[in-house]
Length: 345
Image (cartoon, rainbow, N blue to C red; front, side, top):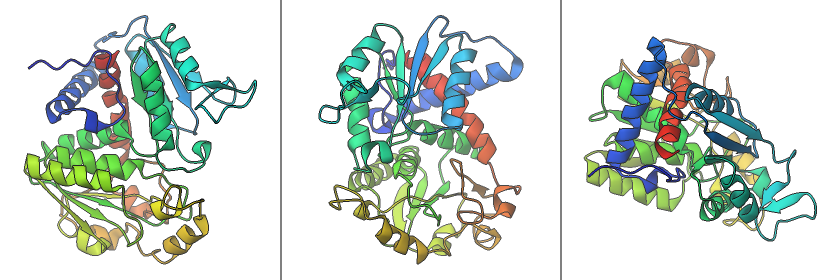
């Protein structure tokens, strides 16, 4: 059956079938080839994407903006501090915010897509509130909503991750994918990257290990979905509290810090970052260094969404070494997002 992408939101990979995700990957590879040989691909000529950034960005903003230019369209950067900040009912402030329902309907009359990045401080670190805001935009908008990262999901990063794996290994079957926590001096790290990564990897049928110290568990719904995908698509999924054990024989290692869900609302009545800092400090040995890379498969690749905390999450010798594919991975954000925009817009 022919997949219909036009007009659809892209908020989480859970809304798409494996076949649809594979179609996006194939379109991304085709657009990447076209760009490499200088072949025009102005699929969104005259189209407009509104980009609302509540958080700072390097890769996300520039990959979307460059992508729209290459597709023949235009991206508008909207800083919530410079506009009437889109807010949910109950969070409004007179003459400084505007309700999401109103913003979504206004922008729907003027453009062809809305992309949103929001997590952490703008929603008071209340887990799920950023995702709710993105979905509230989707409820009111008549044009596609693209999630540029919320507090639950980062689907565009996950698409770049699996495209990179596909390029490096030719496919997914038999690939051991380790999504690992890593130490950082900053506890202000959302759960969105690891959660989308394990969803994507299990959906593609890889053998996935989620590694983290106790107290840094991910969303139980995401774990359940990953277990179901592993069973359905012939891969595997397991959880380890030992970084070295997880790395043994791995083809892909993805060490990335994330915060403790137990110390942010609604698990905790208020943000208790001090407790998270104590937990982090107990696990400073969770760093990706040359010793740990030697435990992995001889052809293993090191991945990270960037920016990384050098000297904490990873050593310079690993991220700047021959097994690192982080800049290929970063470039692939451009290509997968062009595919997503071309298909939905």
